[in-house]
Image 1 (cartoon, rainbow, N blue to C red):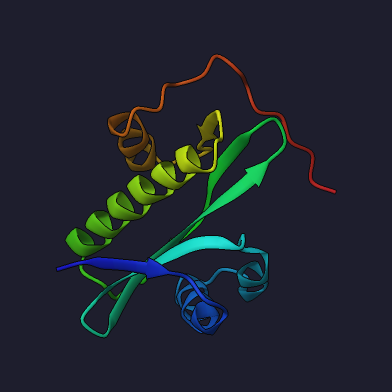
Image 2: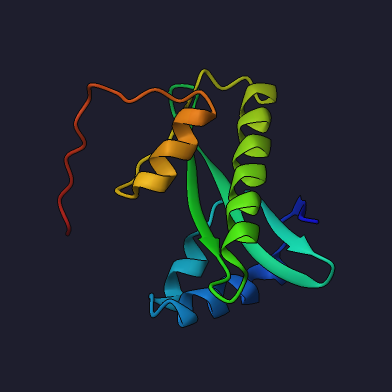
Length: 128
């Protein structure tokens, strides 16, 4: 059974390890927002997700990562639980909208299941 609890600074090592396993820059762990949760089953950590608050009473579901060694069904359940909790938190914080940016079709499908709608806006970015 998957559970979630608030993410603490002591959990950053899990994120760093998962980034390493995924061959992603470990420095990304230093950029996670303050408000987040970690998912676990017994003593096995599955994933983490965060809410990045932004101006205009908006928030981004952000910096989600899973343990690649966890079974895919557990990872999916964890991401669903984390997303649902963070959306609930956004409402309790008085945020007016929650935004998800992704190129992953599974993440898009989950977001749509949770009530997010595909926007007409296009995202533009410049790497500097």
